Image (tube, rainbow, N blue to C red; front, side, top):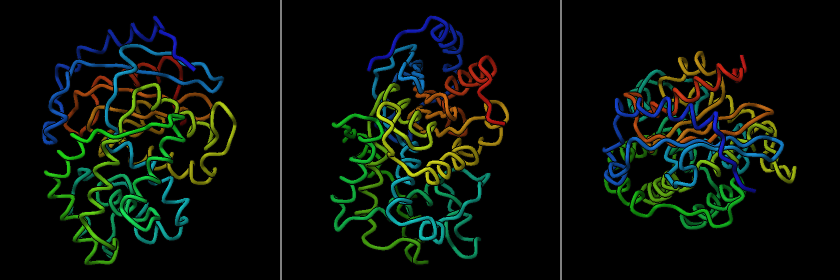
Length: 309
C-alpha cells in the first residue's frame, strides 16, 4: 500500500510550518540535536486502506516515548491487567515526564502511570524473556507486526546516546528496585529501554499503527486481531489522559483524540473507528511536544470534527 499526496493537507502543513521556529529540538539527547527543526510531515491512514500524506512522510525518526504505548500493549498481553497495575498506577500527573518526586511521596511507591518514564521503565521490565536479547526481540517483533514492516530496526547512535546520558532514568530504576517495582539487572533494562525508544519508522508506518488502535486492535488490512480489544482500549485511555505529557488536558480540549508524543517530534494520533495519524515535527515546546504537530492536529480536529468528546 502507498500513500497519496493531498493538496489540502499540504496547505495546512505549509501554514503551520513556521511555528517550528519558536521551538527547540531535544538537545539533551545529543544524537537528536542534529535534526532540522523546520521538518514537518504527516500521514493519515484511513480504515478503508487509503492513505494521504503531506511533507516528507518517508523520513525516519525515532519513536522515543511513543514506544511506551506499544510496549504497554505487549506487557498487558504478557502479564495481564492485574499484574501490570499492581506495579504501575493509572492516574495522570501534572509533573514532567522524567520526574522522580511522586515516586518518593506515593504510597505504595510505584509510578503513577505507564506514560511517564518511571512507569514506562517498569512496564519494559515486565516483558517476558529469558534474556535482554530475547525481551528486545519480542518488542521488535510486536512493533513490526503493528507497522506491517518485517525489518523494523532502531537507531544505534540514538540508543547509545541515550544510554550514555540516562542517569536520571537509572536513578528511577534503582529507586523502583528498592521498592520491588522492578527486578533483575538495571543495565540490561536500560539497554532494552533505550533501544525501544530508538526504534525507527516514518509517518506512514506510525499512522498504520494508529489505525490498529483506531480499530480496537484489528489489522486494518487483514482484519486479524493484533491486540485484544480491552488492551487497545486501555492504551487509548492512557493516550487521552497522559499521552501528551503534562499538556494532556489542554490537548484533550483542543484536539480531543487519543495521542502519544515523543521528544524526537513524533506524534501518534488515533481517531477511533476512522483514522491513524503519524506526524513528525522535531521542534518542541516546553512540555516536550511537537509545536507544529500539535497545531496541525488542532486544525484537522476543528475542520473534520475529530474530537471523541
